Image (cartoon, rainbow over all chains, first blue to last red):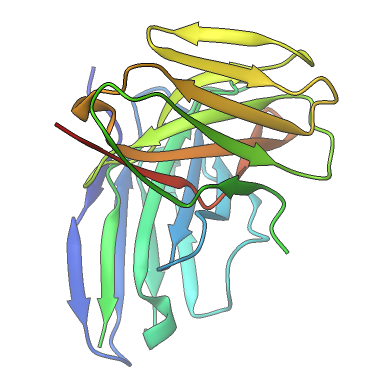
Length: 113
Length: 113
């Protein structure tokens, strides 16, 4: 069974540009999460989807970040316009409903210059 | 202020040595998880501890949940180079069939041959 996949693995963009990150969860996992780790800090929660619905987006930093999960399958996280402080590693995780075990993808390393 | 404080932040030891890393908080938790993250990968769940005073073993790794359920430790016996990685503790904010993980900053372990 394939694990959680994320694309791209690395992205380098200039301040002011737009970037879209993609996450494909494990098939059948209705819960999908986005997390972010900025340098020197802990991994922090961004938001949680249950199927296609946003369950909790309390961790989203500001309105430059937009997450979608159309059809309840893959998800995208768009940053527009990107700022220097958005640099970090963005992780996606998925789980089955009611499970305490989340499976993480390898992350997308975003560098904003 | 971080909910979970991990110590030490960095640890470099020789193969065969024993080590203990700690995860502390002033809050009480219903459960606590330990993850390991290797370079270029996402965190992978090692264990979940639920009961105060609980001890769980995973080969050479021993996990303990504090009696008051505020802290936890991870002890590695006879460390191997393959144990190198980032060790993270995390707790759940569980709601509505899913939930977000709250992570500590992690302990970066390097085991030299």
